[in-house]
Length: 155
Image (cartoon, helix red, strand yellow):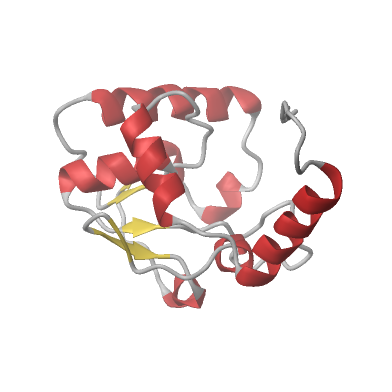
């Protein structure tokens, strides 16, 4: 998200956070972002679309990476090699000083550690868990961790 935000900031694009099809939800057409985070319209001057408006949008082509220009039926199965290729293409584009000529840039590959720490900090400052999720986090912290040193590991 931080890499895509930084690219949108640099190029004047709108950032659409489209997390439909998330493995964390049973509903494939529900955007996971507003399920877990408070709604936002802007991250440091970049317009953000991250709510149910996503379901009404039709993103204009052409697309980058070029894989996404195929007919939908051809995109159902995306092999690992394709995902890795897209990750590398997106990394190159995001680090370049020019914009893509594509109308829509699809960032559907993990770009962890491919952006600067300031971009990551901006994202962490800008997005907040929904209040009911934050309340549960706080309760778990108080019950299990308060007053202790903690090391967190995400696998």
